[in-house]
Amino acid sequence: ILLSQKVNHPQRNPKQQLTAGLLATLLLVIPIWFTIYFILSLAAYPWFFDFVLLYFCISDAGFKPVAKDVVSALEHEQKASARSYLSPWLTQQTDSLSEVGIAKSTIERLLISPSYGTVATILFYAIGGTPLVLFLHLLKQLEHCWPNYVPQYRFFSAPIYIINRFIYALPIWLWNFT
Image (tube, rainbow, N blue to C red; front, side):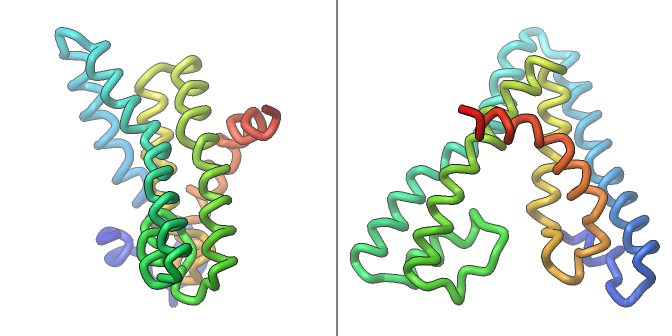
């Protein structure tokens, strides 16, 4: 987020914003990915570190306890608490959501999380191993940091948004198929 504050200038030409977003993505993803990949290649027991990385990439399943907290808060008519529980997990603003909106957002997150967490991680691990899973997970996290629907990130995050839509189409299709 700090990098986007320095290089994303919404008043500039959309092509400049697109270029800045692409370069910022490369600047963030490539060094992190290369460093972790290099450390993994030096490990005496790489399977252990593969397991740890895969566990953290599947961590979207950690939303279930939060969903229970949201439901409990709604049952006790504490919309503010439900919104605060839900806010870090959604890319949309939760301040104006009604009880129905909070419930719908929670259900949507519960239904979508496995496609990005579990299914995508297993599929991409089978295709390219831990390095591919880590690379694609970093791209997905950047999409959450720079949401495309926010006007200041509209052009800046366009490359990440397009890449992720293309890459995650198969895991989403597989999840919807089941």
